[in-house]
Length: 267
Image 1 (tube, one colour):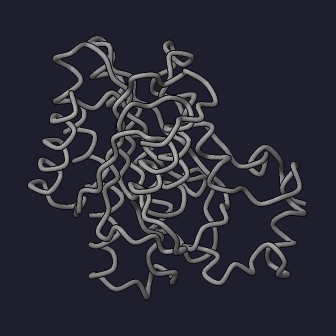
Image 2 (image 1 turned 60 degrees about the horizontal axis):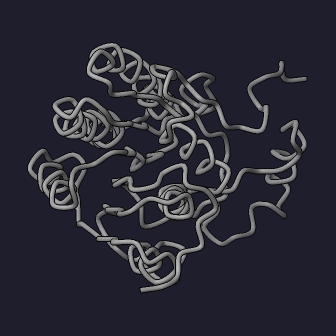
């Protein structure tokens, strides 16, 4: 077991579940949880291999931080698969933090040209997957009287962009679902919140690693007040806050992490 290099004790002893945790934002969140003291983590996805390459997340967590980490193959749109994920968390003592991060951007196309099968898929992944994960987390957390559920939406669920109506609609649904769900589970001591990232340098939007230096990347940086595109670590910091006791009185909220992009009127 590796010596642990803990940045803080904010998540000491916590058991975390992160869907879509093998790559991108999910990988960043899982690593940040370990850095801040989590005792165990379950990384769930269709495949354990990171899209960006390198050591699988669960192995990296064990090797670098010495925590108990597992990979659980999971199809987030399937209730039985989510129940298996929940069972794995119960084996570790039950999930204290559950992050519904897995999602998809889907096809970019005008609504009039959007195929029905693509609509069904994005709704199933982004909405049904978030619901199933939240339901399973609550079934564990409510009887214990504590827990943190974090859903990853997007600023696209607040402001629309060209040819992404279905993506925007599903992420807006995640936002409103989280607010309503927080009202249901709050009296039992469970907090549910939503993170709204802006553009993030992951393989979903930056397949070959050239976005930041491209014309498009420079335009995004220019219209973002902090002057750069986010990294997964930027989103992970917000997740650590929502997973910790520092946010004990925060529930049903949207935490926008977009470098100020949506704070201004375009010009």
